[in-house]
Length: 234
Image 1 (cartoon, helix red, strand yellow):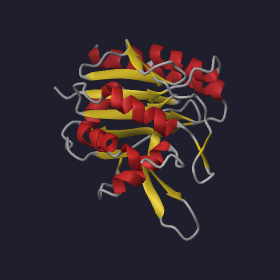
Image 2: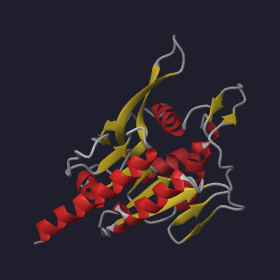
Image 3: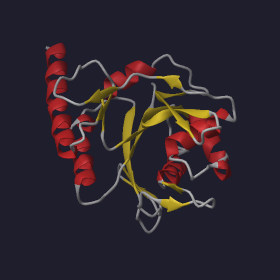
């Protein structure tokens, strides 16, 4: 059986991101799909450990850090790296790294990746990042949701000394994998900005500019999906 670990980059701010965490657990992650396991990972813990489906990391939970070159970047890369290290020896074929404002249809996620190569697979919604005017842009899979096959997770861990933490984690990963001649394949994603939401996507990103509305729309989509799958079974 194909096995996927969904890793959700989460943040306990006792505000909107905590609300996203609860909303995800009670909506799309409430659907059980064989072969799919979800872990939410957080920083600000005294040690790195896994408790049930939560990964707690000894990483400072801040969005800004200083690099050696006096640039600024998020610390998401360090969080993601430590989460990779904790799940490395689990039984899985792929990870799907996503974030708080995403909704994942786990059944369609499995359907999408079924039959794809389990070696050197890196895919997601494609983005490009230009570091400077004269530098070439970096092609990467958006951190809102990207697949990595297990061998690539291990490759990234083995090369953790090369992680450029002056870059946000999705760009960082794209840049490092390019050194091994691995470029991202394109995956579909639907960006939700209104209540008109198609039901045939496995990945939705909520981006209305109103985070409370995003949470409400996540629940709205869950109700629509629940009814859709109920009618299929019926």
